[in-house]
Length: 213
Image 1 (tube, rainbow, N blue to C red):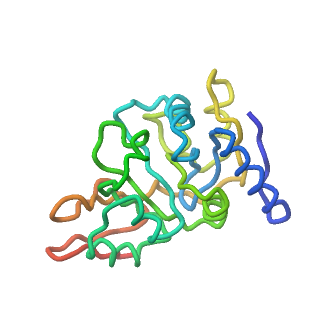
Image 2 (image 1 turned 135 degrees about the vertical axis):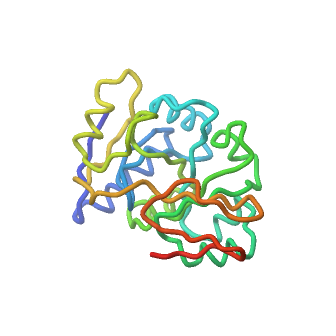
């Protein structure tokens, strides 16, 4: 498990190294705009399976994807006009939208579910990684399943360093500001439903959801 410090001086080099690792099928841990996350190429099914094993995540509990814009999200999922209006305001930001997938390319993430979580993060690092890789990232919080999401790098390293199966690379950006994992809203029903409260407060009325923050 290689630990790479991330700073402004080596930012481009880190992007290049991380993208090369993703293309080789690696699983990486790095900062997001909320908590530390665990990532791999979302279309590399073998890497996705490895991510599940590293997190000890049950097969029936899917992970989400990061994309770099709403246009890309629409390539992978069905987004209603009302949901699109909302997501234009919420993205990039800490809001995961649960949507109906358009393609079976994401079957490794969805498992037996008929939905997929998608988010555009407000993170220069992640957006650059996605752009250069040219593929969405499978993502989840960087913790063993059932444990709290983490913002302190030492706690992240401690949780994985002695495990038999571990991520190949950790991108160390230091401690992040305290944060909850992203807010999750299900847009697959007639009326959107907040599945998890998070940094973005969402109000659901009879017409369409609204951001309050």
